[in-house]
Length: 114
Length: 111
Image 1 (spheres, rainbow over the protein chains, first blue to last red):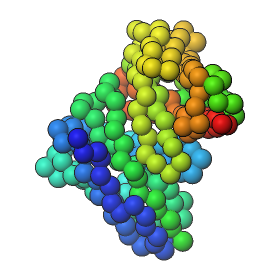
Image 2: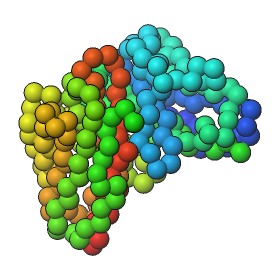
Image 3: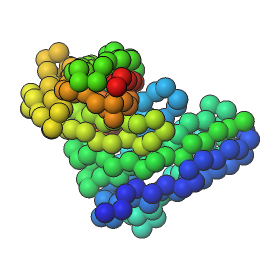
Image 4: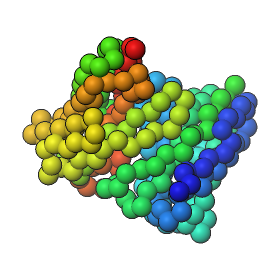
């Protein structure tokens, strides 16, 4: 079974620029999560999708972050404009159902904002 | 923080020894999960324990949950160098959809 795919793996941008990350979850997984992991910290949930609907986005900085999940499969996370404090690893995860199921994580995208 | 404080922050042991790490949380949970993260990699699910369970085993892993103390522990027996990683607990709250990861324990197993 193919795992969760993410691209790009690394991205370096200047502050105030925009960036987008892509995630392809495991086939058949209804729930998709985006996390932000700052160096030395645990992942922080940004947004959770159930199929193509948003279940929770309470910790998503909506003034600059946006996310969508088209047709309930792939998802993109966008930052516009980026700030220095957005430097982090952005992790995508998927699961069969909601929070009572284990999550499968992709390798992450390491973003550096200069 | 909302949930999930691991203790200790860092742990260094010799190969073959047991490693114990603890997780404390603040509000009622539906379940608690443990994940491992190797340096520069994504997280890997280890074990899920529900709020009505007190202990679970998986291979060399043993997890306990004490809901009265709002705490959980992860025991890795007969550790191996390959167990070197960061270990995170994550809590799914009893109400709502939020899911919180803790700060992690960095485990180093010396060959």
